[in-house]
Image 1 (cartoon, rainbow, N blue to C red):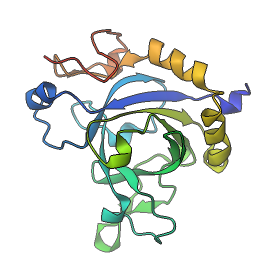
Image 2 (image 1 turned 30 degrees about the vertical axis):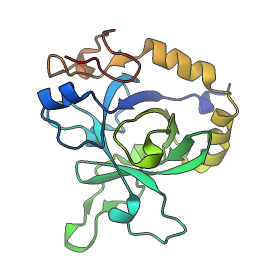
Image 3 (image 1 turned 90 degrees about the vertical axis):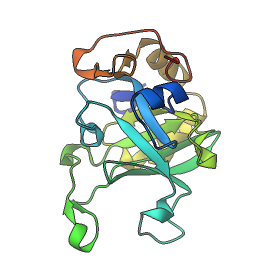
Length: 208
């Protein structure tokens, strides 16, 4: 496989258990938190982290916050820190794609501000796998995100390769080797420490 087509990062986002949501005072039931990752050198998602070191995205419908023609607007999208992370374009087999806002500024009118996503990351491509739970706009969901550097222009081609199973072994390897992003049991950031833990189940985080 060409290096151009290898993901530079992987993020496992999941809806946390009810007990963990209560412990860390999460009120939004459609919130997906990053529990595992690969790619400590990838900074493209840093603007979406909060001051505690959590990386989470809120599930929603782009029609609620995105100004676009109906033909270009998708059914589901993700936001964080009052920013549109991406709309998700569903291809098939519960696999889709998206990408960062590439404009220099974001927002409208008096709310316009500089795009916080570094320019070097604005042409990246996000491939979303396991979208079953997201399609109904419910919080009981998880999603695996593969990040491809500067591959926005090849979104449909790479997405089709994922659908065809060409990335099955890559995704399986990332799932097995990924590190914990944030320790919700201790309520502390782990991302910067690059430590690995194994006390999380496949759906996200164990009850505490």
